Length: 413
Image (cartoon, rainbow, N blue to C red; front, top):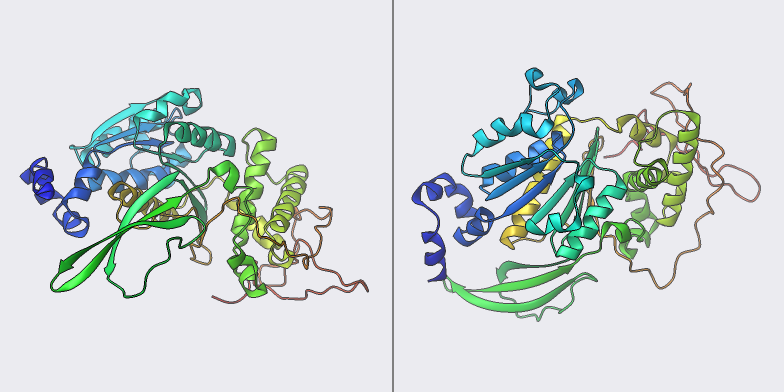
């Protein structure tokens, strides 16, 4: 009966328009999506993809806030603007194209700097998505969202690399599964627990409706939290952790020191970033040999750039997770997703202030950052690159003679 009442609030035209997704996640979920009020901050390539997916999914209201103007470099990966809009406000320039994708969605444009907004501003939205900002601005908005009890996402692109961070505070969602004779554990992970189980019959099968609850940490805490023991207990698992996690943490620490600016290739910035990266790698309890100068250099070269394929992947993932959260039907991201376009992998790391009972002491201490990333690398692209720091035996011999390929990664997929 409840589903019939819900369907009456959706017109026949809407049912026809959203038929495929209604078949996928149901009328009730579509109604929740239809009534959602979402804030999207900074309208560059990544936000273009997020907006496209959310608008086509049929959200109720989308507010885009961006105080910057369209520049020539924006034309490379942003598809809602054109050469004629150079010099115009980025959000205003894109408004007609966004509206044309789905006129049923209410679209609001705000040209004020989000940094000037008071904390109360964010309470009017159901979900806040902050993109392409510095770490301090991310954490400030995150704190305001926590006060207002609103889900928060932070996301960004750096060339071949990208990330999504989610702080949903406490989020309940329902999954359906065949009834099992084995009683499920109440607590599945340190952050996820089962809060309710109901059953229903479908085609003579008993289906369980399991309500789970995920608990989240704010970005400020997650950024200083250790990796779960599953990622650090075994040497093989430690080696599989992408150095992108280390570089992202180093970048955010650098932005704290630089007032939000990105590191450049001058000697001082390279030395500072190298030290921050090594410190972060050691704090994560990772083997220092897995952090080499080639990856650091590649990461720095990608900073601030946008690539359409990476924006498509990250934007699609982010929009899908927002839809999952609104419909409360699937497991959301917990809590940091990283994308390495060079290796085409997108691991998810649950980062929370849960420290292992015993911290391993078999890793070498972090040496001073005396050898920053070389300004002029004489090594040809196809030959050996030297790691940032190499473990040394007591007799002074180098313990790492591993050859890497031209992009700084091991020759394995």
